[in-house]
Length: 404
Image (cartoon, rainbow, N blue to C red; front, side):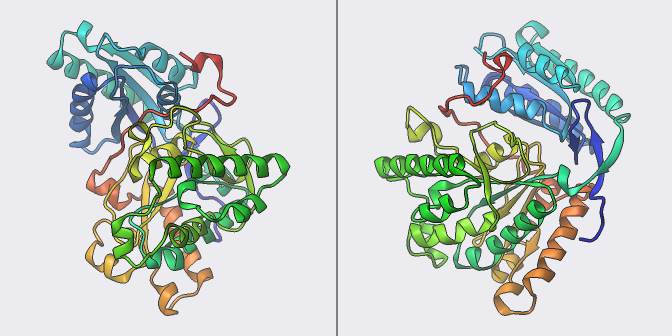
C-alpha cells in the first residue's frame, strides 16, 4: 500500500480519528435491550449507521462498566444514547456524561420514566435522528497508518489457519507496526506451549514478566476447568492438540516486539504490537468468562481497535457492533462455500500461486477501502453479535470517574 494517507477519518474532539461515524445505543440491562434494538432497527432499515450494545445483567461488574465506557468513547462512534430500565445498578447518566466529556453527542433516559416501550422507542428515535443530523457536520481529516489500531482473532480454525490465514494477518501486523500503527492480539489460551517464545518478544524486562504472569494465569485457568481452547470442529479441520493449534494461532501476532500486556478496556499507550490479557484475575468462574469469538472481539474493540481481523478455516459468519470485522480464510473450499460471509481468501499462500508480499499488499488495499467506507460482508449482512460476559480484573490506570 503506497498511499501515504489511509483515508479521510472522522475527527473527534478528544483528538482521536474514526473510520466510521455511527450512533451507538447502549442498554444498561437486559430489560432495556428491546427498546434499544427497535430504535436501532428503525434506522438500520433506512440505511443509517446506528448500532446497539450493552450489559445484560442488572448487577454491577466493573469490567463491563469499563467496556461500555470505551465503546461510548470509541473513535468510530460519534453519538451515544444510553437507555436504562430504571432499577438496575448501572447508571445511564454516568455513561452518557463520559461520552459527552469526550466530545460525543450524548443523551440518556430511563424507559420507566419515559412511559414504557412505545413512548421510549418514539423518544429514542427523535434523539437519534437529531444526533445523525449533527454528525453530518463532523470534520473529515487525513488518517494515516500511525493513527490506526487493528485487532486479530481466530475462530473456527483448521489446518490452513496457521499456514495461510493467520500467517497473512501476522504479516499485516508487522506492516502496521513498522509504519507506526498499533496492533492488538489476545487468545493466550491458544498460546499453550509457547511461553518462552512469547516472553522472548517482550520489549523489556517488565513486559517479559507481564507476559509470563499472564501466560501462567491462563494455564492455571485452563488446567483447573479443562477449558483448553481446542474444539471438535478444530479436530475435524485437521488439528490434533492445543499445542499444534497454538503454534498456528500465535502466528497472527507477527514477529515484532510486544510493547505491553493490556487488561480489558485498557488502551495501548505506545505504538506497535500489544497482547490483551482477558483471563480474570480473581473469581475464575468459566460460566462468567468463557465466551464465543464475537465477545472476544468486543474486548479487542474495547482496547480501541478500528478494525478486527477474524481468521477462520472452518468458516464464520459473525460481526460485531462498533468496529468492522474482516473475515479471512486460508481454506479454498470454505471460501467457495461462504463467499457471502468471508471477505478474503488466503489460499494462494498454500498452493504457491501468490507470494506473501503480494498478498499482504492486496490485503492492505482491502484494509484501506474499508477505512474509506466500504462495508465488510458482516456489515452488509447486519451481523452484530457478542455478549459482555462478567469478568474480574484489577483496574489498570483507570480514571476514578470510570469506577462506579
